[in-house]
Image 1 (cartoon, rainbow, N blue to C red):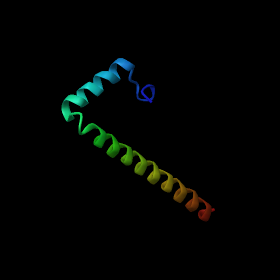
Image 2: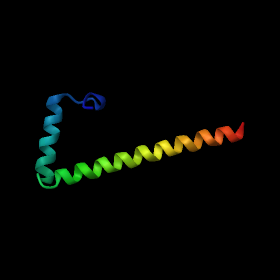
Image 3: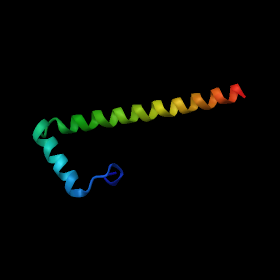
Length: 61
C-alpha cells in the first residue's frame, strides 16, 4: 500500500510519527477506524455508481 501512494518506508515512518505527535496515541486507533469506514463507504458508492451506469447503458441500447 505504501508503494501505491508513492511513499518509502522512511517517509511512512515520519508521517506516522507526525500523526502520533499531532493526535496522540489514544486518538490514532479511532482515526484509523474512521478512515477505514470512510474508504469502505466510498468503495461501496463507486460500485453502486458503476452498477447504475451499466444498467442505464443496457436500457439505452
